Amino acid sequence: EDQVTQSPEALRLQEGESSSLNCSYTVSGLRGLFWYRQDPGKGPEFLFTLYSAGEEKEKERLKATLTKKESFLHITAPKPEDSATYLCAVQDWAGTYKYIFGTGTRLKVLA
Amino acid sequence: DGGITQSPKYLFRKEGQNVTLSCEQNLNHDAMYWYRQDPGQGLRLIYYSQIVNDFQKGDIAEGYSVSREKKESFPLTVTSAQKNPTAFYLCASIGQGVYSGANVLTFGAGSRLTVL
Image (cartoon, rainbow over all chains, first blue to last red; front, side, top):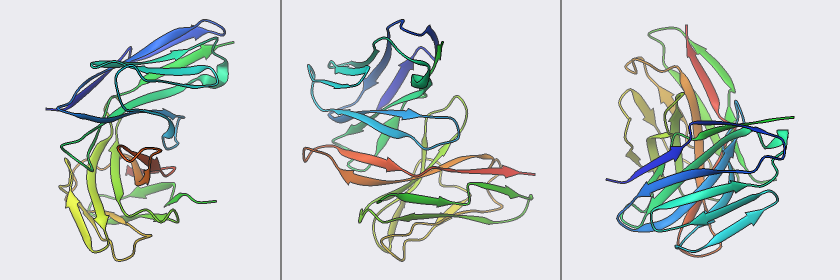
């Protein structure tokens, strides 16, 4: 059964303190892995799609990487405005329209 | 600008009442989804629709109903049969990714339903 596990559940960082969020996944055939940012009371905002092991994507202070079993979202020198919940999701080739979401990591960056 | 509009943003329901959440998109997307989000849980799929006049149950469809009469619209009705409807509801649609493989879900801003 497809499964996505995110860790840690919550993370507090000082401004400028770099760290990584983890997304472990189990799928029969990975079609794509997605990272979203969600602010309180709002819908998720798309960040990255990763397709194959070894792939990396960057956007400002965020960098996403992918292996055959997990993905990392690296946050370099975070700012308070990076505070949000970060969601990971996978799409399996077997279930064309089905997405499996993790429970998210709540990130708080302190000034 | 293209996007997904959900309304209302906040909704209160008395027990025994049916309520309908609206979802409209102007992205020309074929597939649309409804998810439910509860604290500490991942997004759970309620219903999805790949084309007009067709829809499929997701993992937690009991107590919910949908229709897809127009490509742009995918309303969700929360019926009195849904025993624990208080949650944040998200509508989404599929856009095409850069490659032909994976499809990026685009989300609306959400609707928060509270049962009084």
